[in-house]
Amino acid sequence: MSSEYLKQAAILAAFIEKVRESGHACGETLMQKAAYVMKELFGVPLSDEFRIHYYGPFSFQLENRLSLMEAEDFVRVSPREIGVTYDVGGRFHQLREQFPQTLAKYQQAIDFAAEQLGPLRVKELEPLTTALFVTRLQPTATSNSRSSKLMEIKPHVKPAEAAAAIATVDGWIASTAE
Amino acid sequence: MAKEHNEFRDPIHGFIVLTSDERKVVNSRPFQRLRHIHQLALTWLVYPAATHKRFEHCLGVMDLAGRVFDVLTDPENRRTTGRLKAIFPSTDPTDGKHRYWRSVVRMAALCHDLGHIPFSHGAEELLPKETHHENLSVEVIRSPLMQQLWASMTPPLNADHIAKIAVGVEKWNGETFTEWEELMTEIVTGDPFGVDRIDYLLRDSLHAGVAYGRFDHRRVIDTLRILWDDERQKAVVGIEAGGLHAAEGLQLARYFMFEQLYFHRVRRALDVHLKQYLRAFLPNGTYPATIDGHLRLTDDHVLAAMQDDVADSESPRQEVASRILQRRFFRVLYEIRSEDLRKNIDAVGLVYRAARERYGSDQVVRDTNINPQKAESAAGKPLRIAVERDDGVVVSSIQMSQILGKLPKAVFDYVFIVPEFLEEARTWLHENLEQILAEKEAS
Image (cartoon, rainbow over all chains, first blue to last red; front, side, top):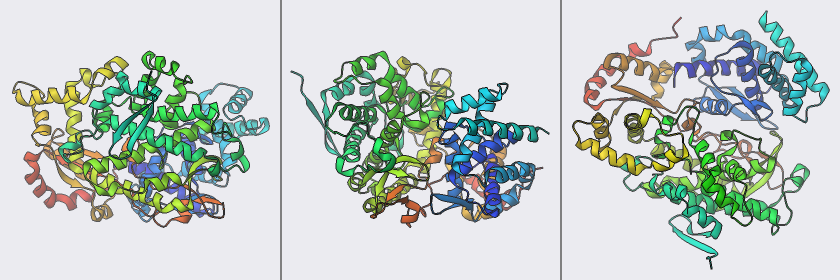
C-alpha cells in the first residue's frame, strides 16, 4: 500500500466519522457521491475515476478502495434496515495519527460533504451529483441547458428537480470559490 | 449434413455440448489461439500441473452460463411481483426472444476471453495505455471475421449484445446497458455469482492440486434467482436462503485460492520478471494494439524466445530469462506484518523505500494488490449479496450470514530483493527496522 493510498483512506474514513457523529447512516451510495463532490469541488486528491452509472457519478475503483479499507479495518460495514452503513474501523486512529496534516488540509471538504450530503437520501443525491457532473462537463452552458442535459442522462428526474439541483450546485461552486 | 451437436470432454463439467453455431466460433482463429494462452501465466513453474489454458476455461464458462440462464428464466423460479414483472423479455421460454438471449449469453461466455494477451493477467500492464484485455475482446467480437459468423447464425446474433454481456458494465465503453442486459452480464461477469469466477476457481483448483477451491457450485447455481434489491432499487442476481451455505463455500474457496495460489509469493515474483522480460521482448515494450498483432502473439512465441535467450550469453534478455527459467527469481525480503503495521501503518512502504535507497532501484521491487487502480485489488472482496428469505423478503447477506461479513479480504504486499543480496539485506533490515518504522508524515 502506498502513502497516497493511505492518505486517501484517511480522508474517506474521516468523512465517515463525521457523518456518523451527525447521527446519519453512511451507505455505499453516499460514499460514492461524497467522494465525487470532495474531489470535484475541493480538489481532494482521490485518484478514482468517476462516470455516470448507479445514481449518478460512480467509480468502480472507489468501490475497490472501500473494500480494501474494510479489509484493513480502516472502515467497517454493518447492516441497517435497508442496506448497510459504514463506520470507522479499529485502525482508523492510526490513519489519523499518521496523516494529521493531510486531514487538516482537507477538513473543510470533509465537513462540507458531511453537512450537505450526509442527511440526503439516494433519490436526492442522484440529481445533485449528476448536476455537478453535467456542470463540469459543460462549465459555460446555461442553467437551462445543463438542466436539459441532466434530464437526458437521468430521464426520471423531473424538470423542477433538475433546475433546483443545478441551482444548488452553482451555489456550491460559488461558495467554494470564495 | 452438419452435425447439430458437438461435445468436448471436460474434467470439471463432464461433457460440454455445443450447437453447430457455437462450434463455428470454437473453430475460428481467435478462439483456437486460446489453446496457447496459459490460464495462470507462469504458475506452472510453482504448481507443475497448472498448465491448463484459456481454451477449456471458456468452454466451461459457456456451459455454466447456459445452466444459469435456464435456472434464472425457469417459470417456476421467476419472481413476478412489483417491478420484476417487466424484467423478462418473454414469458414463454420456447419463443424466439428467449432463445435469442440464451444464445447471446452462451456466446458471450464463450468469447469473454478472446482478448487475453499472452500469459493472461501476468503482464496486463504492458497493454497500451487505457487498454485492457476486455477492450480487445470487444474488438475481436466486432471484427469482420467474427461478424461474418454472427450473421450466419440462426437467428443472427448482434455483435454488440455479445460484447456487452462478455465484458460487463465496468469495462464497457458505449451505449448504456438495459436492465435485462445488466442481468445477463451478471451471469457471466458478476460478482460473486458470475460463471467466469465459478469456472476458474474449480478449474484452477483442480489443475493446481489445491483442494480449497472446491465448493458446491451446483447448489449455488440451482438457488440463483432474479430478485429485487430495495436499497439499490434494481433487479439483481441473488440467491434463495437455501443456497446461502453454498454461497459461503464459494466465498471461502475464493479467499483460500487467492491466499494459496493467485497471490503466492513465487508466482508474484515470476510475474515481476515476466513483465521485465516482455518489456525487452515486445516492440516498444508494449503489447500490440491491433487485432492482427494480438492474434499473432501467444505464450508459445514468448517461451520459445525465452529459452533461446537463456542459452545466449550475448542476449540482453539472458539475465531476466534465466531468473525465470533457472529459478533465480527475486525473494521476499519483507511482507505485511500486523505487529509492524501497529507501529506504522505505512510499514511496507517505508521498508521498500529504505531498501531501494540502500541496494538500488533495480535490485528491489514492491508488488501489492492494495491499489484500487489494479484489477487484483478487487480480489476476494467481502460479499454482499441479495438473499431471499423463506418468507419471500429480500435482505442483504450481511444480515443472514455470519461468514460472508467476517471473512478477511485477500491482500498481499511484498518487498522483493535480488537473491544475491538476500542474506545481507535480512541482517540489515533486522538491525534497522525499528528506526525505519519510526518515520511519520513529512511536512
